[in-house]
Length: 55
Image (cartoon, rainbow, N blue to C red):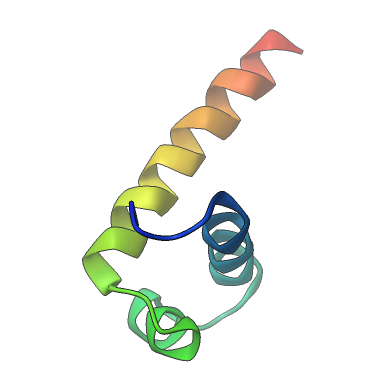
């Protein structure tokens, strides 16, 4: 999701993580590429794990 703003990325990722919809539905709802969303979600989850381990 390199061509998308950080705000949009975070909003889409949070929507995906908080919703029961799948990647495809979430990507279509926000007009983003499914494979880009998949990569961003994976990176976000790694970041969350690292952040949680610091607490």
